[in-house]
Figure 1 (tube, rainbow, N blue to C red):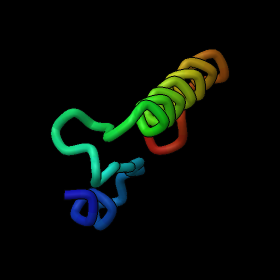
Figure 2 (tube, rainbow, N blue to C red; figure 1 turned 45 degrees about the vertical axis):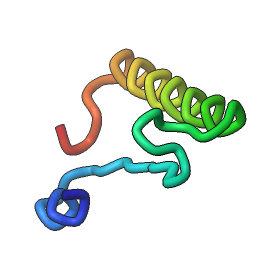
Figure 3 (cartoon, helix red, strand yellow; figure 1 turned 180 degrees about the horizontal axis):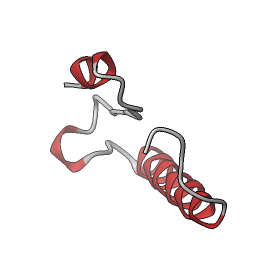
Length: 57
């Protein structure tokens, strides 16, 4: 799906921990890393709202 979205010109951000299974993380370090990724993404999105729409939207 990611390849198809990129072909269509979408801005795709994707990260997967393969050891975690359906829970998403195999240990606390991986869980913390996933949380950091999510919060960083959210912070950047909220910051972009105050500076106008993002390129491509």
